[in-house]
Image 1 (cartoon, rainbow, N blue to C red):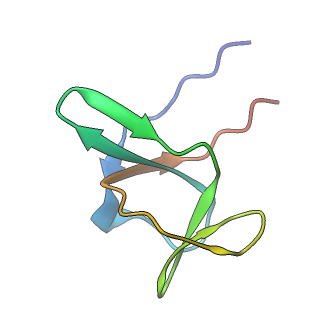
Image 2 (cartoon, rainbow, N blue to C red):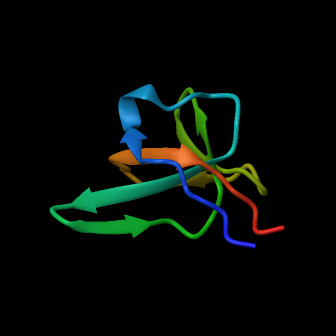
Amino acid sequence: MIQMQTAWQPISTAPFDRDLELAVLEGADTHALLARCRRAPYGWVNALTGKPIDVNPTHWREWRSES
């Protein structure tokens, strides 16, 4: 089954309460992170481990599992 991805949203609108897919958009290129992430008051964390990650994303969208 093919799942449709939602459009990338500006990082300033990222919510704190859910798993997200993060990306850096450079021109026409999209560089998405492979790990699901969560926004924290002090930055970004890996949603599965809770460990901080050093990333400066420009965009986000809902994390979609491939179930």
